Amino acid sequence: MWVSRVPVPVEYRVDGPVDDDFDSLEVGGIVPEWNIYDPIWAPTGVGEIEGNRTLRLEDKDPYDYARAVRVFQEGTKSRVSFRVRAEQTDTGELEIEMLDQFGNRPVRIALTDEGTIRATDGGRAVTVGKYEPDRWYEFELTIDASLFGSFDLAIDGKPVLTDAELAEAVRSVERLSFRTGAFRTEPTRRTESEVTVPDLEGADEPVSAAVFHIDDVAAGSE
Image 1 (cartoon, rainbow, N blue to C red):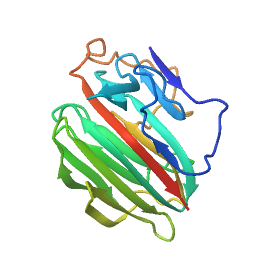
Image 2 (cartoon, rainbow, N blue to C red):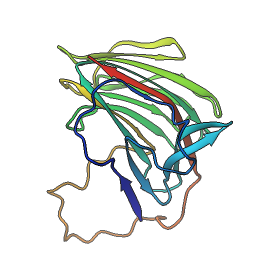
Image 3 (tube, helix red, strand yellow):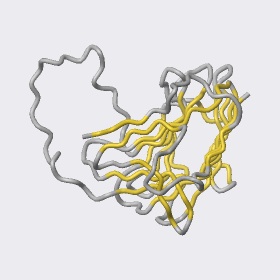
């Protein structure tokens, strides 16, 4: 069983800067202004760590993931920052992406299950650092979707990628996505619904839980 939560009334755009710190929210409660994907074994909601309220993503589902998406003001040039804290480094992944209105993913960053931070520079994956459990890391992204498109990435104030190529050509960006599993391309409207497929092996057994906390999300565009 899974549940998605979409803020209503549905709005296709956001005007003005975004600044979410989650401090006023109830632990275990809903996360306003965020689009949430919340399966039973991959819950997404408000957490608390060391007295600080956070956006918490947990995943112990062998085939599904937790996901949270924040829409911000659309722009050709955007600046986004956030903090991330993982409770482990040896299981699960957190994939962080910037999206346009069509769901294209020009900026892709991942905290891997090998304890590394990976980013996509054009068509290649680049390791830009390592991360430790139970430690906050501050990410700063500057995206320029004009001309050929590029982005800069800094972690804890230190530039780790400069003038990196976008993974996909876009005209603008307007969404920030956090997801605890790989991007899925199926099913689509063309997927055959009558085909019988075998059961997924181990689908009834949870795996070791991976937990990620997100805080202090800020975004603005021009």
